[in-house]
Image (cartoon, rainbow, N blue to C red; front, top):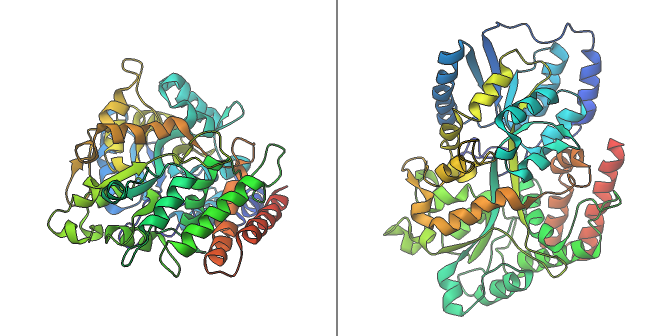
Length: 472
């Protein structure tokens, strides 16, 4: 996940650069097998690699850490880490015996890869979840961070992929909300007019954001990366339907040329598209709370909140082959490494209890609590989340802008989201597939007209099958 210039660490884009991580770690851990064990360090210092590495967020974490240090005497060394550099850093640390005690903000795919190489203390993660109370966590978040009965990490936060649309334009045209394939395509066609596109859709071959956008549509049509028998499912009928929809949207109703994470947002913010698919990290920017990513539509000049107030939000989409609407999102975790110091579990426990609300408040638009409450109040953190101020240059609770019902719907994604490969026991496939980008590459070729939808599905399936074989 290459960070954006204006957003040095936003977890709406999965990790890039994890190609070969499993193989590299195998070599690294073998080479380091004669090491003496955990890194030499001061007993009263914990090293935390933090993937949420924006300077202002690291500073906010330091303030939260101060409470833990005051109570325990253990100092926290927060090290900002670029996700793109994480694989090489892990390999180097595994060889040298300098793994951090804890890694913050790990996405599901990398959690699985580290677990495969036995670099996580899963017993410590299970202990933290048990002591906090498994029933205080989202069952979905726990399921996605488990391998069978083994708790791999401590789920901390959830963000959702959402379809945002111009409610005013839909109402004026008498269109149904874009919750189904049929409604999405009908609206895209109807609202593609001179000066405006029906949708702006990611087609960048070099960015996992394109895969995220595709998966968010695919899940609701029953299109799975891996089928029930363990084979790659991208060439199945349900996935071909998703490729066909994506092809129509990208070529007929979206701007020409490569569409990126930046351009899709910019086009929607300029009022030049009636729909786009993005993550919930869009919400504070769309509300005019971040000066370097303000809406630029004509109406927005007089009222920075105009676009947010005229935008509808869809969190789950259903296709013709799907049984029900499905949500897509990411669960990020605290990972306790096998090289941790004695206070690591205590620190993670603190961050999921006393320090939890403050941590969520760093960026509530992308940090819905995976732990919804505690023994005294099962909805304590979920309730508080809705009132946390969001934004950078201006701060305001998102519920005040988008309404409680919308925020509640976004929150429900934590209990309903689905992901590829993990339910089929092949979560370790996610990292390499994200890194090698077979799906974005075929989508790009499809969008520029060099591949038909059926050929794109077949080509993507072949590439993923090759990756699957390499992991066997």
